[in-house]
Image 1 (cartoon, rainbow, N blue to C red):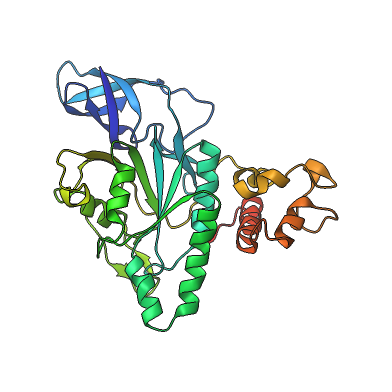
Image 2: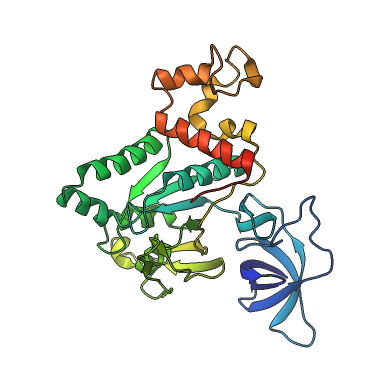
Length: 328
């Protein structure tokens, strides 16, 4: 029987089967054969074949994973191996905030690089946009401009960027239009409001939301494992039309997003604005783009084709990959 994985940890997975029964399933023997060891071999969104337990209809065993359209993953430092977050995505929703918790663009840049590597379309969502607007009212124009400039940089690179507020509802109608009839995974640091956004999308879907730690400016982990949720989109977001749906994978908050299977000398391949300049340096593919003469990338930074912010972010992430020391 075919089913879709909706959640799971260790060797126990919840599978929504084609007969509309949700079953708790284990993995049969060495069914999952890959050339890599994963922290978890199956993720929400995976389509699997499973055998129903002969003694208990509510249980089963996964016997096969269907070929994946894509996977989104990160490197799990604790487990010392890659961790699958979601499979078969239409969109990767990268959620950030102007503050509470603080705006951390390098987190987004890392996740964008991983999405480019995996061939997944990202959408950047800046939630709590009412806080950014409050910055202006409070005379913090410089803080606002730093955030707005970074969002504009991503937009200029061709990424979809939304400025939303789960609290006020700003931008939520456009967001619902993007999510409709798609499978999307929400990824972001704790406290950015992933679950709050989902609750606004569907009034009947009540996910726990956490308060923010004032000492550290981080949210509490209210989502403990990735879970696929079927949403009935709020009619107020669909011009009163009933029955519109979206499929969301809500993932636990990530403090540090560590890249998987991307080497430092490969990272430039996944910063899309670098693409037209790679291979055009004096030293060709051997150029490190640091201080070499006649470096096409450095020249592009000097001429404004690559922004200083993104170049600095690329440099920092390269150093993190080389040293294995990742910051927030």
